[in-house]
Image (cartoon, rainbow, N blue to C red):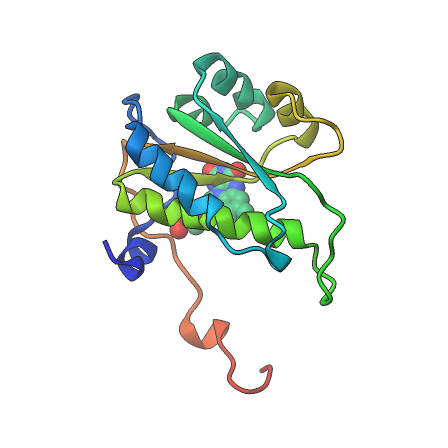
Length: 170
Ligand SMILES: Cc1cc2nc3c(=O)[nH]c(=O)nc-3n(C[C@H](O)[C@H](O)[C@H](O)COP(=O)(O)O)c2cc1C
């Protein structure tokens, strides 16, 4: 699958088959994160790959009751090891870096025939407790991963003219 196909066909998947993910597929998806670019190549991340069903179930209330978080065979937490590096432009680097790595995983998952959903609706302290993450780290996002049990229609997007300006802001 070429990258543009992966981008256009990707949907947030919120229903998963229970089938496990083959190790080779999972490893390529994790490599897509490990090889991601990051500011100053600091790679300020740790990804926790959660397969244990009891831990996945414990994540459900920490994710505001989103049941599919417990149903997906794998949930990946993107954790910032450091949060103090701010880009010259004023944007905290760890958020950008981890978002890029997670995005690369979503696209490689498409190539592997797997679905994903970003999870931003979670309680920081509860997820840290479930996953044993030290207080000074920050969970930036979670990602569910598994074989899709639904094929959602595309969600609407703003029009080309709304999202692009050329040469000057307009
Ligand atoms: C940062 C971020 C956080 C999100 N958090 C959640 C979430 O907690 N639960 C959920 O079901 N979807 C979540 N989503 C998925 C969005 O709702 C989804 O990407 C959007 O509606 C567009 O749909 P699509 O991904 O199918 O194109 C999140 C997406 C992003 C990028």
